[in-house]
Length: 364
Length: 224
Ligand SMILES: Nc1ncnc2c1ncn2[C@@H]1O[C@H](COP(=O)(O)OP(=O)(O)OP(=O)(O)O)[C@@H](O)[C@H]1O
Ligand SMILES: [Mg+2]
Image (cartoon, rainbow over all chains, first blue to last red; front, side, top):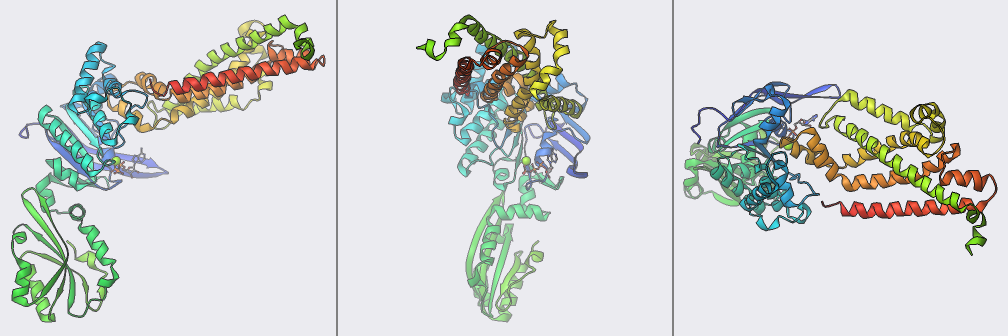
């Protein structure tokens, strides 16, 4: 599927500018985005980056201030209102808070998109039932949304989004209100739909785990711009932008561990021959026995405070936070040795000075 | 027994019963007409407001201003002001049918605001979903707003009908007929206090019934 010639979604120079209190806010800034049919394309970014605004231009729920939106070969901005509504039916959408209709049963919710089609009630209900079975909620047709768990509600929302047989499914933080296990189940369902129905999925999230587990491609968004993009394994195994790096780090819980260690006062009074270090390995370096080499070659002792390995595609990224102790000269040589072997070393604290203030500038 | 407590009511019994019917007549028809009008205007306010499904700042601000203007006129003054218009529409200014005109004008802006508030209770995100599914504006109004908002709309309607029963009695001051009329022109003017009290009791019962039926309906319509 991936080798398709023309993109199913083609955003060309799309900008969205909001005017508020006389100031203009560039929520989306000159974005170009091409998504191939059958892809699962992730868009990751922190709150306010403009992700929702960007994907809402895909079905023109948000009119771009400038730029063109082409979906399935049609320039959406040139369509009449009824034509646009027809086009929207082929772009399903699911949301963080599910947005089900509380006055209707689960079955009626899934039937809703079919109400405007001229098919018999029996056919409509049969289709809705089939969709409910597809998402694993066959026996819940008579329930009301309020009687369902978050994960079940999202399944209903997915069934509803599929009712018009869309080519594209846009998911705006669809798993952000769910626990990790339920998130996984929903993501598996999306992946299955992608594989069995050939559905193109655009998936917004602020969690890298979500991107890693289902997406083929990813775009990193910041302040209305896409700052980095490509295949998921490539982008995250060798991030070019600090923000992307940030997502990788927090996904491996490194950010959290660092914060904890930095605020631990007992680690502030290291003795003069101790160094608190943050080490990051990539690829080849993760497979070497560098820590035992330190001990053998430089007589240094390493006390490991934190360790984790993040696997992205075929690459691994290793993280270690250690207290290294030994003679001053040996310490310097040991750190040099690590550097030469492709380990990125960051000094968090030394014996005398305590936590360094400029640690941030050392990270890369 | 009744003869001792309500001697004058018994005396004018047929007229008293007629005035109950008159009040019901005025309440029913003005509820119906003002209800449709208020519902329409309320919907216009909701869909044309900024971020609404048919956003239109001009229509919104015009409608909003008209509603505010009409709501700021005290009803008793509205009754007087409406005289020529009523005469033009109905051909007379007295009687129950003539009173429908000021009643409708007096209550529909109130109801429109109630409708607006009820519909704004619906999460805008819930409206976003059908928009993304290609629903048209009428489809969203009838299948989403009016259904999801139904229990709140019914509660708003109860409040409105109860206010309206109050207004029908005020219309009695200009000879509309009904319980208000009888309470003033007989009970008050002739010092026949039992007539006033009886009229009040009947009105209390009406309010009570509207409240009970409305609450029951609102509960029934949470799920459709
Ligand atoms: N209708 C609007 N009017 C004015 N400003 C808006 C509007 N919608 C969004 N914005 C602004 O545009 C920016 C981007 O918002 P957007 O919702 O696209 O971010 P996001 O990346 O989806 O964030 P989140 O992760 O919190 O959902 C924000 O600064 C937001 O305040
Ligand atoms: Mg968002």
